[in-house]
Every structure is written in C-alpha cells, then in structure tokens.
Image (cartoon, rainbow, N blue to C red; front, side, top):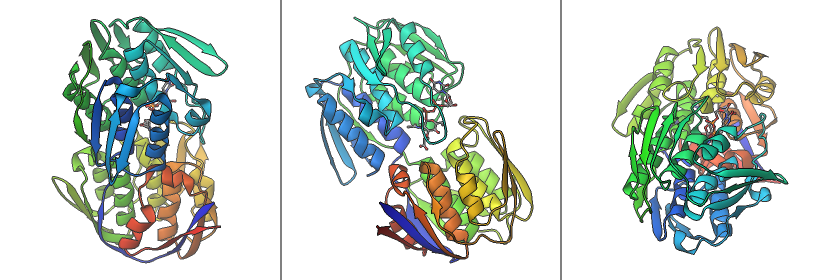
Length: 416
Ligand code: EPZ
C-alpha cells in the first residue's frame, strides 16, 4: 500500500497547473450515457475516481477511450442497466448513472452507495425527485430499482441544495416529457458546467447559475465536445499551501470560483494577485486567525474545510471552523493533533488554538480532503511525516507528489 514521505519546513516556489475538475467530469461522463453516439471530453484528470467511473461505464456497455487527458464515450453500445455494489461502494458518484439511464432506457438498477469515511451519505433527495418525475422506485437487497415508461416533467423543491441530487434530477429532466422546475437547486460550478454541457448536447435548460432550474424536456440528445472546467478544490488546496509556505502561481484555474477562499486568505494575511485563469499567492509573515463557516456555493466549500483548519493550526491565535454541510467531516483532526496541532471539536465546530509550528509524525489518511490536509500539515511541519493509505488522495488529486516536488517540496511516494 502506498505512503507519502514528506520532509517539511521548506519554502514553496514556482508554478503549478491545475487539472480538470473531478466533480465536474464525473457527471459529464454519466451524461454521455444519454447520447446514442460519441461524446468527447478534454482536460479529464487521471484520477482513481475517473478510472472507477470508466470501469462503471464499461460495465454498462459504453465504449470508453481515455488518453492524455482526452476521453471519448460512445453511448450507442450501452446494454447493461445495472451499477454493481462492489463498484458503487468505492465511489458515491457512481450514483450519477441513475438519472441518465432511467431517462434514456426507462429502467435502471443501482446499488445504494452506503456511507463514507465520515458518516452516512443519504440519497433520499435523489429518489424523491425521481418519484416526482413519475419513476417507480423499489429497494431490493441494497439495490435501488427505478422504472418509468417515460419520465414526466414536474416541480421539485429540494430540502437542501444537494449537488448530486441536482445533477441526477437535471439529467433525468432533460429527457422527460414536458417541463421540470427544480427549486433550491445547487449552484456549484460543476452543476453549471453540467447544465451548459447538456444544452450543448441539445437539452433545453434555463435558470443556469440560479437556484431555480427550468428544463423543457426533449426526445433525445446528440454528441458534443466538452472542455472540463478547472478543479477549484485542487486549486484551493494549493493556494492554502502557498499561504502557509510560499510564493507560488497557479495556472489554468478560475479565480471566480474561489472568491470566498481568496477573501479569507487575504484576511489571514496572504498577498494574492489574480488574472483571468491564474492566481499568485505570497505567504504571510504570520497567519492571522480567521474563522470560517462552510456553506453551499458560493460560500466557503466544505471540501476545503480540512485544508483551512491546517492553515489555522499555525495562526497567531485561536480560530473557529464550522461545517454546516457535513456535521461529522472531521476525521482529520486527531491526525493533525498528532502533528502537534491544538484542535478541539465540539459537534460540527472545530476550535483551533494556533501553535508556533507543527512537528512531523506518522499519520493516516481517511478521505480525499482529510488526506490533502495531512500533506499540507507535513509540508508545514519540522521533520519527517509518513502519510499512509494514500489511495484516498489519489481519488481526487492528479500527480500530487509530482506537482508539490515541482514547487520545492521534499515529498516521495513509497510502496511498502
Ligand atoms: C458533492 O457530493 C461532492 N462530490 C462532494 O465532494 C462535496 O463535498 C459535496 O457535493 C458538497 O459540496 C461530487 O461532486 C462527486 P450533496 P454530494 O448531495 O453530491 C445531504 C470531494 O471531496 N444529502 O451536496 O454527495 C448530505 O448528507 C467530495 O470531492 C441528503 O441528506 O453532496 C450532505 O449533508 C466529498 N440527502 C448535504 O446534503 C440526499 O439525497 C450535501 O450533500 C443528498 C444529500
């Protein structure tokens, strides 16, 4: 099993190219299942999760080729309408096949995704939304069976602006008969790209970028060539590293997707310059304690909560980080305290008392973004840190040790 070995305390300098967004490419891949033809995607990141989604598309019969960031998906050969448990349990985003396959074929069987490292991840909004569109949903042996001769447009209002449920219902709605209105829809850039991509494929979606999405169903979609947007969470991770240790520039990123993080980094003392698709950051002489509360987009992303906590671990005072999206996403805290951080947790609120510096130690990854926070901690710490279970990080960060090596970090991957 791979581990990363980091000798910390060195300054960062140089440039890093941000990859295509994991959370944009996964629904775009399943949207291609709705096309009786070929869809091509550019700037696809080579991640464990994209490889898992390729395996899933292979299982349902779509032809997939992927080389040097370019992917083509042929939806004309889809012949198996089932997403198996042993694959769905490794990646919740597999659930994104539900809407597309149901909308195009009228039947689909998908394993329930189960929980994840930090707790239950229900899918009730997805299922209630599909039932509103006329689907018959039954649960058998841990699998969801969804059937509908033809989905019919309807009005759906989410209790919470769920990213995944918005994606699934939008994809189902584009081939439903009549109009679908989604109230309290997610507005994340990845959902915006999905809607814009579907319109390029012949869908009729209005209200994109708003919390009220209006869809006029069509009979079929057609092929398209799509460019995946930059990964704002990968970019935010490198920006936080720069705020702690360096003077770095990020290329191929979109500062507009990171406005709240940039504001918080400036409050914490970093110097930031932006252009249309790059961001430069210079570390602060000392880091101001800066409270954060995560919110749905355009608020501070929950996917950067762990990384922000690490930065606050060496601030010149105490700060508070509250996660309102996932109340139990804090498995990284005991590991960060092993690096000498002084963090206490009360429900979904972390209280971080800044220390002068972190000290290297063996630590264990628990999920994608927790692993990223451990790498940031290791880079900031004096001494050596061994990070185990690195498969978590490989799910969501392309070539992370190579990108950090190019920024001057002493980091190597070891395979024990
Ligand atoms: C997406 O997950 C992202 N994953 C997550 O990123 C991200 O943390 C999350 O959105 C929030 O921004 C992908 O896009 C592949 P949600 P998703 O549905 O769609 C509750 C990463 O690190 N909920 O917006 O699963 C849910 O429990 C990953 O890249 C229900 O109660 O998130 C949570 O509290 C981790 N019922 C809240 O809504 C439902 O049916 C937000 O979840 C669905 C969600």
